[in-house]
Image 1 (cartoon, rainbow, N blue to C red):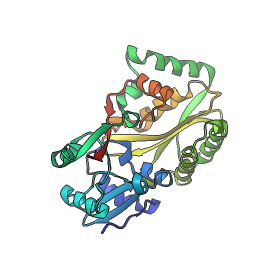
Image 2 (image 1 turned 120 degrees about the vertical axis):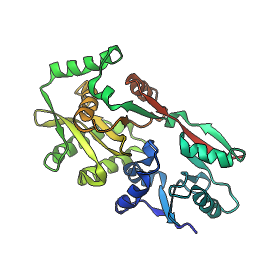
Image 3 (image 1 turned 180 degrees about the vertical axis):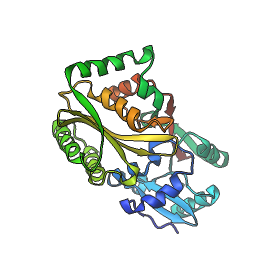
Image 4 (image 1 turned 90 degrees about the horizontal axis):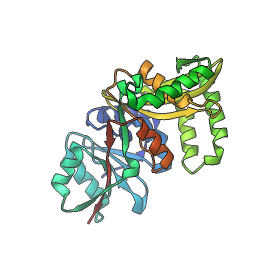
Length: 292
């Protein structure tokens, strides 16, 4: 029987063993994401017979990921046994694991595309070098910022993390009017990551103007080819800072990765426009799988 428990910081090594070997590139497969949003989505996990089972939600809203481990069929049986007479509801990304699921259950499930959750993946070299006509406006934003401000980039370390925390505090005060039920969880997640920078494989970068941090970003590895940017913030008085931190973080810290996952747009028109403007190489599709 599956015994589910909350995902905590202590579970990092457990998840690392499973997540690095499943060949999936979605932001949901980054441990840091599951940890940050644990309270918001009730992310829970169980390990049984060598299979990692992850679920979110409660009751009728309970949703499962496809099982992770060396025996897909066993993992599915464990989920079905746990759900008893109710067929489980799945949230999945495109790829080999979805294909395998459909090879067994295509006649039992309806597959619904979830556009608002598509991940935007970019070639790291494109974000770092911004070459060609398609990135002309991005280069202009960076040039304009450089004309206005005497800035520098720094990797986030234990020595400068206090300055990053000051910037984060300012940003959340500045954007309090945008607050919804998710923003407090994000804020708590930022505080957690900055409390022990480097834990969970987190990397971060910041833009300084003088001694003030005006933009920062935080992310972690999904697998050896893909890095996930979880958090990116810039103060409103520094127009162009988002373009600068995006570019500098990749150029200075992430060139070992082929792709940068900048996550989804949540269906927000402005955010979708911004993410599309960087010309994603892959729009990673997500689906809801519900029993017929």
